Amino acid sequence: MNTTFRRHDKQQGAIAIVLGLTLVVLFAMGGLVLDLGHLYIAKTELQNGADSAALAGAVELNQSATGIDNAQAKAIAIAQKNRYDFSTTLTLTAANISFGPSPDGPWSSGASARTSPQGQTFIRVDTGSKTFATYLMGIAGIASTSTSGVAVAGRFVNDVTPIGVCAVDPANKTAQYTYPAAPAGTGLTELLEFGFRRGVTYNLFGLNPLGGPSDPYLINPVDAPPGSCSASHSSAASTAPFMCTGSSAVITSGTGQVYTNTGLSASLAASLNSRFDDYGGPSVCDPATAPPDTNIKEFPCVGGASPCAATAANSPPTGWMQPGASTLPSQQPVSLSGNKPNYQLPSAGPVPAPSATFAQFAGYGVLWSYGPAYQSNGATPAKAGTAYSVADANANPMYSTAKANYFDTASYPVSPGAGFPASTPPSPYNQTSGPTFQAPSAAHPGQRNRRILNVVLVDCRTAPVGPASCGVMNAVGIGKFFMTMKADFSGGTKRLDVEFAGLIEPVPNSEIKLYK
Image (spheres, one colour):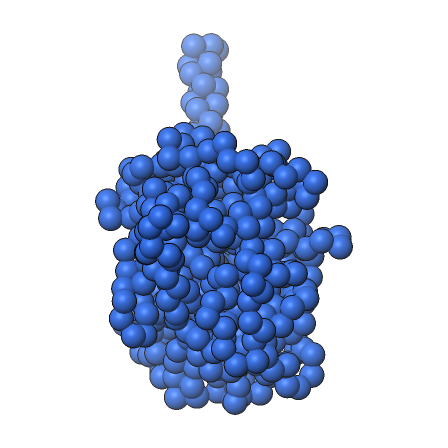
């Protein structure tokens, strides 16, 4: 017997077995690559179709039934211009489209949204699951795969945080206060807006033109008179996402009526504090849609107390207010209790006239952390004129009955940081380095002016009309406030310390964009 040929036959059989096993593996790998690649392409095509349909539909949403109809029709029409699986037309129906007041819903069908379109400014497009036959994976028993595309687009109607606070002087939108001439002052004017002074820090839990404490109101961010009010829309859970983004769907003109709910619960402070890169505790904020500010440095009194110790007459606020004066502010915000300080001038109507004993420097808190006071332009009605310099402020009795060195001219910034317009008045906030600057974490890129809260100013001379969760109040304007410190709504002393920075006119609209 020829053993050489017999050994060769055995080798050929082994090669055939190895080749067969290799082909099975190659077919499996080829199927994995081919079919997963097909699935990825189909997923991308469906997602692109959903994105374009959602963006097109969002443009049509105007809080009317017609807007709902137009948005639905536009989304369906744009979807049909898209293809998936290389050549199949993307066909949507009304069942694939829903509407809601925020990027997180709750979502309603077109028919339901049409009956109550107020606040429905977001559209969700779901292509539904699409099934595709596999090319090679069928060998492994996988005959088909499926995928879908989901997109959410829209806008918050305006960048107004759903918080309402009492206007100090609701009868006067603007007013002019004139300081005495030399030697008592320099005769400069100061602009007042609904009784507020730019550059002054207020605790929004203490604003009440009639005296006494007054919690801010929680504004219903979705419903507005004369439409119906749903109490659930002004609950802490429903308003928390709006607090995160600083947006709402009411007061598109800056004045009118709003639905209010009494009080701000402790959990809502966490939503506001996302601006300081704080997403812990009960916060529901997403850094992607509610990023921190580019400067998260808090501006408290020395030692970080809020308020500063009332017994420490010389416990001054942060560095730029330490010129060595004999009396310095002894608290974080200005106090509205007791004597009415001169920022209420001129008073009108039933608002009590300011006391003859004006608030002294010790009665004010941190000043000018975001920006300075402004002079009046001399027109009627008064408008913002030239910004004050620290030297101008020190030369006038702005925060006491006699002029004093309120600011340390050597410590207060002389120019804004890099990236800010050169025309921006310098302030501790608009720095990009130094002791008044702190960047957020690298994981959460910041957005400039996120610490700004555009807040509804309401006329508190008239109590809310209606149930506590849907009380109707008159809004007189929108105030721009800067958060000097994190909010704290817990315990007996609730705080939301903010610096007034002017009125917002016109009300800023949000841009339409994809959220998911």
